[in-house]
Length: 257
Image (cartoon, rainbow, N blue to C red):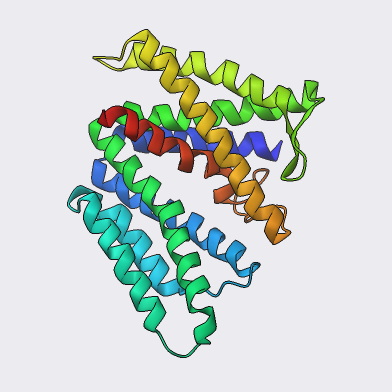
């Protein structure tokens, strides 16, 4: 019940922001969400013995998302490189941990902040592209969850996520792909071809499922059940958006070609 109530509250709020908010306000919201995801990732990293430079991570993560309108991609990678050098030179901690600390911090920034920068770019192109990404994430998650509970018999990745099943994965793909294609064809003024919409929706769903498994692997290695507890019935923000972090780049790549 908590899971359903959380979704009922969040979906209208998010939808209203996506379609009624300016691109700048959407980027600010995305930056806040990125920082929540980054914070949860850094907590997971601590279970691996990583001591990240949190303040630098938060500042860099917010900058990556908010500067998306004016800062080109190569500059982002330059900033990442400079941050790496800064972390390697910092004092006050054991130098033997500099590499893992810098690596963990940088991974967190790229993993959580960079996709939300791309999400802001999608919104600038059309609010429908961002909502499409969110919609497929929500639909795919719900289909996998309920199909897995009702008909799940074969474990998908028992070592990583014992609750996930092949039946749930198939339901996620079969439900979200056609609905995603219909959304693109119906709501975009100059929508893509049906073939492109179907293939893209399939790719987005598969990327989201891989993202879900990747975050599950991080949690399994850290020996924790959830990345956080901010969303009742869902766990942490990263638990809810792990698939989006992988699917957003797929959409951006498809639109760039």
